[in-house]
Image 1 (cartoon, helix red, strand yellow):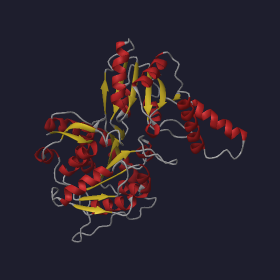
Image 2: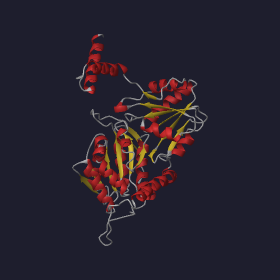
Image 3: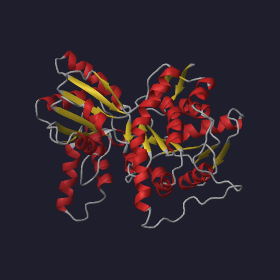
Image 4: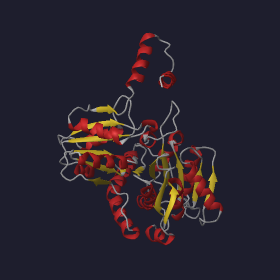
Length: 420
C-alpha cells in the first residue's frame, strides 16, 4: 500500500511486518522515531507475540538482543553514533556467536566534537565487527532492506545492520510502498534458529575457545560472509518476484555503459549524484554512477566488474580514517588493484554538510581534467583551517580547535551582516 510517511515510520512498519519477538530500545537521535513507533505498535497489540523492552543503555539493548536471539526469539534493535560505539563489545559478541539479530543504524557522525548530523562514520567504524552492513539509497529501499535483512540474517545465522542516513532519510517524508502482511509472510518464513538455549536439550553458547579451534571459528565466519555474496543477489531476486520491485543486492549501476569516468558511493547521496550526472552528460561529460548496497561483505568482484573499462573512478566517501584514507576509497582501491584504473577519493558530507549538485559537478569536471588530487575534501573551508593552523603556530595555548573555528565562523558572519 502506498503511504506518505516519514522514513522512520516506514521502517517501523516494515520491522513490525517481520513479526519480531523482541524489540529492545534505547533512544538516540536520529533513530528514536523508529523505536517509538514500534513501541506504539506493540502497545496497541498490532505485533503478535512481541515484547518491547526499554533498557538502560545501548549496551543493554544489544545484550538483550543477544539473550533473546540465543533463546530462539527474532530480535531487533536500533541505534546511531555514540550509541553504536557504546554497544561495541556486545556487537562483536553477537556476530561471534552467530546470532541473526537485525539492527537499524541511523547513520550519524561520531564525536567529539558533538555532532548529531549525518555521515557514515558510525557504522563504518564497526566494519570489522562481523556484521553484514547494507546501505539504503532512499526510504523505499530502507523499508525493503529491513524485510530482506531478517531473511538474510536467519539464513546465514549472522547479524545484519541496515544503514540509513540519519535525518536525510529517517526524518524525510516520502511516498513508500508498505507491503501487506501476506506478502511478508510469503517472503519471510517463521524463525528457525540454528542454535537455541533449551532446558530440555542443554548446550553452552559462547564457551571459551583456545588456540586449538579459534582460527577455525574465524574461518567459518569468513566462509559465511563469502556465502552472503551469493545469498544477497538471490534474496534480491526472490524479493522482486513477490513485491514487484528490485531493492538491495550487492550494487546497482546508473548510466555506466561505455563511460570513461564512474562515481561510486553509498546511501542517500546517490540520488544527488545521479541528478548531477544527468546534467553533466547533457553538457557532454561521459560519466556514470555505481551505488554500493552491501559494504559488508564487500563485493570486490562485483565492484571490479561494475567499474571495468573506466579510466578513472571517483569515490564519494562519507567518512575518513585519520592517518590513512577514506574507508570506502580503500576498499575500492583494493578491488581495482592491478587494473590500472586511477582512483580519487572525495571526502564529502561529514557531520551533515550538504552534498550539492554544484559541488559534485565541479569535482567531477576536475577529475575529468586530471586536476583532482588522490584525496580531496570537498567544500573544505580553507580559511577556517588556515586561521586555526596560524593560531597553533603562534602560541602553545591556542585553545580547542573546534571552538576556536566556531568563533571564526561567528565573527565572519557578523562582519558579513554588518557590511550589508
